[in-house]
Amino acid sequence: MNITAFATFIIVTFLVALISWVKTRRHKITTSAGLFLANRKLSFTAVGTALFFTNISAAEFVGNSESVYLNNMTVMAWGISSVFAMLIVSEFVIPVYLKGAMSTTPDFLENRYDSQTKKLVSIVFLIGYMVNLLPIVLYTGAVALNGLFHFSDIWDISYGASIWILVWCIGLIGSLYSILGGLKAIVISDLVLGVCMFSGALLLAYFGLKYVGNGDLQNGIHTILSSKTEHLNSIGTAGDAIPFSTIFTGMILMNLFYWGTEQVIVQQALASSNLEASQKGIALACAGKLLGPLLFILPGIIAVHMYQSMENTTEVFSRVVSEVSPPVLSGFIAAVIFGAAITSFSPGLNSASTLFILNLYKPFKEKEGIPVTEKNLLKTSKRFEMFASLLAMFIAPLFLFSSDSFYTFMQKINAAFSIPIFTIMFVGFVTKKVPPIAAKIGLAFCLTGYILTQMVFDTGIHFLHVLAILFVLTSVIMLIIGKLYPMERAYVAQNKPVVDLKPWKYRHWVNGLLLLIMILLFLLFSPLYLSAAR
Image (cartoon, rainbow, N blue to C red):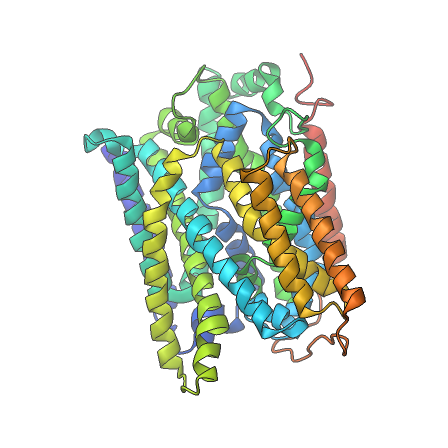
């Protein structure tokens, strides 16, 4: 281990924590709204950086770099194409949530269908968080840190054992962040880490390109643009990890779910001071997503020119950082990776607690006639967060046994929870009389169908196309039920806003520019330009 790198890591991590503490020390958490929604007072910069950094965990660094190294830049479609979904959510979905003063996305399902549907979806969300989202954040953070500091060699233990230890370190620190600081502390850390991330990405690009160019930056740029250009292709064929056609089927559905329904993400936008701040914040997060090729893809491209082969490809990013960067930068980037893991794990815990407390625990207590105080809600939420974090820490190391490309493996698991929920949400948004029983049947059909097609039957169809087929079939089933057994009274959206709902005046112009940049990026990294045969 390089002492300078490790010292830099400790110092930067301490400074981020110190800034967060200074900014939140007078922010006393006395209510569930303060713990879960930062009292709905976040500015657009806070919303934007929170959205972006909550989305960015070590999985983005580890998974994207590995996928580019093994395949090509088709993996960038997940991040770049999400801009379209984010803008749809900004324009049509967030106003509905804020208008109804909703704290969780399943609140919409209770208004649209019934309380049983809300509870059922909340349970599905919680299962997804505890067996997928939280463990993945911990695992990839551990992989990245071990690759940067080689703890397994220093401690003279196996690779798997070092991952176990690091998973528990990240999990325990992330738990403290969430339990003691709530959403406000997480958002402050996001602001600081956002600046650090972009600075680190630019410096890593500089040193990485110089390394490839044998000390000459321009030669490094020329090398990656003139050789092995097949890795610069973002337009995937049927044989690639992400065929381009999947962007228009399952991928758009998963992105719409993630940015418009996923509690851990939507909760950041619901904490905004008004609709304008929320829409500006989403646009800011979109700008961050469009920088994805620089932040997450370039290290994988650099690795292509550095290594002929690697035994453990999940360490592509870590090896590039440790070999091309000066020790201070390696420590700095390690601190950013560690911070990214913490500020993805902590919001996940916070959102899981929000769902459990507001959608399951509190309604159950009230139904039993047991009075529930704010003090009791806060105490119970902290206990639940400890339970969820412990479960995630036990599950995370099991990802060592995944055989697929990690990023693809992660998205396949995500799909099992996302599309069933998104489908019943979508039908609820676009119809007025589809009954609650249709939502329950639709949820069960879509979830069962996906599990069967991925684990029992080999359809030979890409899993994202399967998602689109299941979405259509489930929607048709729900619409048929709605036609045969419609609700007696048509659904009427709630109107009890707690913040100003005036939309952002310039959103259409900015959104149009963001979409144009998205299209140009796909053209830039395509056989029409950078990946053309030389």
